[in-house]
Amino acid sequence: MENEVKVIAIKLPFDLQERILTFPFLHAISEYYPKADLHFITPKKDVEVLNLLPFKAYYHLFNEDDIKTVLDVHPYTANINVYNVDLFISLTNSFPDAALGIGLRAKKRVGFSDNWKTLVLTDKIPRPAGHHVVEDFMNLFQTAVGGQVDKRMRVTSRSLSKIVETTEPFIAINLSPIREAVIEQEWFDLISMFENQRIVLFFADEQVKGQQLIQSFIDRLPKTNSYINFVWHDMIELGRMLAQARGVLTYNGACGALSAYVGSRTLILYDIEDPQKTGPFYFLADVAVMGVNNPTLVNSNSGQKGSMKARTTFNMTEVAKKAFEFFSL
Image (cartoon, rainbow, N blue to C red; front, side, top):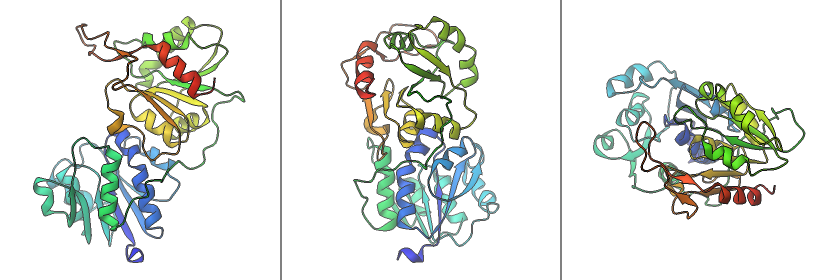
């Protein structure tokens, strides 16, 4: 019975994008057990992203090296002050993570099964290869609660206040990643196709390095648009800006998932990932993807040598057409 589950502990992934993609699962658990105390065992890095969730939970932080082996489990669980755990769920493939349920003396321990994890989990399912990661988490939800996922569920963040001081609508463009210490020429080509737009430029990753390059980049851009260089200090500030945007353009990664979760129309260029496995899913916002199996792509860098890895590049004329349509510019 739902009212018998009073304390739930959940081990979240270390990777930020994957952590954000657990949010539909976390919403589902919160709604299924509305009176239970939720305890998230979560990486310390970017932990504030969890404050975007519209429900209360307790956070128990760890650093990347804190839970590396089974020998780390007992000292960690002995010091996080979580008691009488009715349900423990591990959302990772790690055996030490699965063993946290033993350390917490959880009555029911749910996770992905393989090898030694079957010894420490009471309820488990195999993690199928090639499926969307959110569906993997939802399969664990079904195993944990013995019920079905609402396929029509769409989740979004708590209400966020504005942070960009403008009354005009704007589009936000994530200039990350920075390769070869330059901002991608693709972004210059794309932005040059816009006219009379307010554009917020930001770096979801490597912001310090990006700030060393941004002014010279803006100086080159057409003066037919107005530009704002947005510097954020934590994931909440970044989320607030994205939520305020009329549309967000980004390469694949955590930024796309974050933008979709806070409710903004998000156009994601997938150059190295498959959106069928990592694209924002169960989020309320409209998301458009360009990438895998898309005829607008060309592999123009495949012959280059050096530190720049071969990657897919985009026909930015087609991207601009999609952006104009999707963002109603």
